[in-house]
Length: 240
Image (cartoon, rainbow, N blue to C red; front, side, top):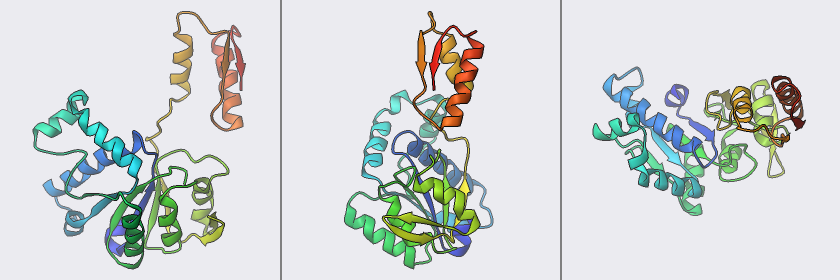
């Protein structure tokens, strides 16, 4: 983010509409709050930094999260009691209509206004994030931050793999050279890991006769299948 603040660029975050987007908004509110409490090197820019949520469906789900505030955890409720708004703060800007979306893409691509954009789809296979990528991937002022898994064959995987090498990606049938910074931030996966999946199966009252693995790359599914067979003593059939 400080690279964008220094160079007047945009941080593009391709994100899935449910859960991960709201988690990011929550985290950014805390970052902005801490910057106000203890201003750092780019204090002035942080105070002006806008975070654009450009996804109509994500906006709707964020509204639902706000409506469910009585069910938030203790930490989130403590922020509210302190007068904070974790999912509706001043620097958060909602982009709803397609006309506003197109105008925002043009403005951020041409101006030197630092900004953060959160837009779907998470693997860059469609959605509004594609327009931001086409407009900004070729400019070193900008950055792309991946916070989710990028499956092979998706534009997100191509950007993640070839971007750091100065490669290119095809978006909407166009070749787009990658000069923007490409980053991957771990820890935001919405999926259970191997140990969680293993506990889910082994803690059932009765072991299932069969488990079908339908998500993930072939090598990962095969490794999980071998692991499940080992921990259950071969008592279940696993189809990778």
